[in-house]
Image (cartoon, helix red, strand yellow):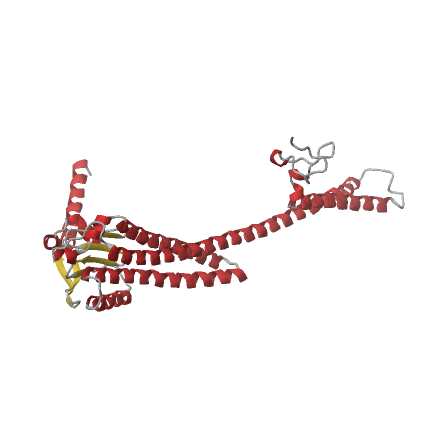
Length: 378
């Protein structure tokens, strides 16, 4: 295939892909709740251009709430007439008199979504609440996010704690694989919780965005000053503290898992060292037996040594061979035992000077009680 034909084939494939994606990418499915908290539209299809014109958004803003676009960083954005929320399983557009919940493609937890929708409807219908419409919607969203994090934390804690208890009794390959899987799961969960906390902290640091989120007051012609956002600040700080607690609990669980992994590694290293020591002991004993068999090899060469007629020659040679084998084996085993012995007295602090004084590091010299003749600093 020539270069022109290859380029034409690539262009045709790209056009087919773009044409196949175009109708899907130009529309979003969402559920709309009106100002009374009633569901107005369920999973309705809307064009992105219509959404941008109706809610005064830029096309790039819709990418934050489009679940088909990979976006792992939670965000809470304040725009002119709405609030854009993209946290975990929730992608929403909040206005002063309506809430748009965009469908999350690939979500399998329908129970969580149903509970969230029920709680959102109930919260929006509350007339006795002192919070405006948009803050009640935001409170329901953050409550659902915290509930999702807590439920996942409870499940992960149950699985991890059970596995750690099992590892205390027995260590096998399958349990170590599960420990690795749970460790990765905990790490991912902690990162998600941390990102949610970072998103809340970023909003709390922007006074202008906090004041702009009072859309009901803005609609009534009473815009807030940049420093007048106490109610919203308290609301966000409450959920930020809850997310921080979940993150700390996940970090604690990660620490327990890492400690268990380190202990398991120490146990496995100890077992491996025991096997290596056994191998060395067998090698030392084999060396001793080999040295003891040298005598038998020498006397087995059919050479005259004038010991054939002695009645004590056999016992003398046998005793010498056994003694040599035992001596070599004992020396080797004793040296191995000294090498394996670990203690404070085996280091450089146990060495003495020729005059009898202990070798003491420079920072410790001059202190009483370290060595009998240790020199003292002036």
